[in-house]
Image (cartoon, rainbow, N blue to C red; front, side, top):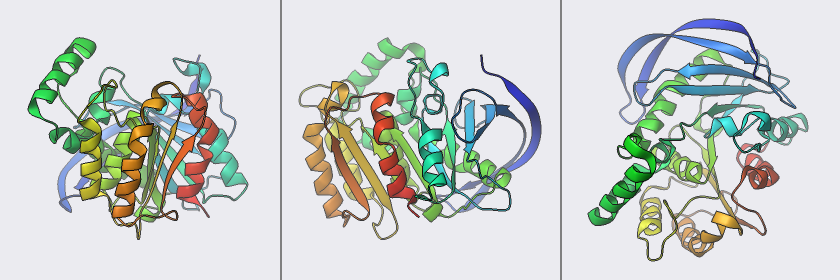
Amino acid sequence: MKAFKSILAITFVLVFISCKEKQQVVNDVINIEISDYSGNLSLGTIKRIDSFPSKYVRPRTVDIWLPNNYSKNEKYAVLYMHDGQMLFDAESTWNKQEWKVDEIVGGLIDSAKIKDCIVVAMWNHSDIRHTEYYPQKPFDLLPKKFKDSIFETATKQFGTAFKGIQSDNYLKFIVEEVKPFIDANFSTLTTPEDTFIAGSSMGGLISMYALCEYPEIFGGAACLSTHWVGFMPQENSPVPATFFSYLAQNLPSPKNHKIYFDYGTNTLDEYYLPFQQGLEEVLKLKGYNELNSKNLKFEGHDHSENSWNLRFQIPVQFLLNN
């Protein structure tokens, strides 16, 4: 069982700043409790917020992983990650797998291979994960008939919880609510050069979308096993083309941004191979090269945490290299 101690109640004045509008939009006073997580970690510690409040999305758990050397006298880069319940402790995950983020990031910090950083892990709600992680603007590019069929199928699969795409609100939750709280309560570097976002599968899609929608917030994104098919794989789907069309219009400047993609060859990942060349063409079109982008193939890797933790050190070093 998970254990918690040293519960700290923080009354925090959140000044929500719309990064797209560059203006103050609301002031709220909220009470947030931070607990010490004492589950299974190899390196570092975790501060946990059981129910982070939001005006944009359903409240959820947010974990803040701190390295062994964490000190309020130093400043740390920040890596934001999706599917937070899958990152640190296999004993608490549904499939008994984990990303091993504490081992990988902590080990790279201890060996001075990356800059000092913390990891902010935002949990998902499984019934609305797809609606929050599917990028809104590419979805808007789909033919109406196709969108209608998707909603009909998704409603049968997810029930009443599926009420349309919510990714824009999910990004506002991260940028306007989570990030201001993290920067106010932890010793962070706040510029895009020190702020990154990462995820896999649908989490790869939303990480890509976050970099494009908020290039003034995020300096880089890691997109592992990016789910280019969007939904279940099907022939002649218009979905992948909408992602590449969106990227061609919105991928930020390679002069001050990095983006990492990869894919395996087994299970769900085998469906991604036909789209990697299209991705490569978009990256070249936007001026990206091997210094600021990656598009890597991992033979034999499947669509699971046990594969992602075998290669997660690669995008971490790519984004946070010393």
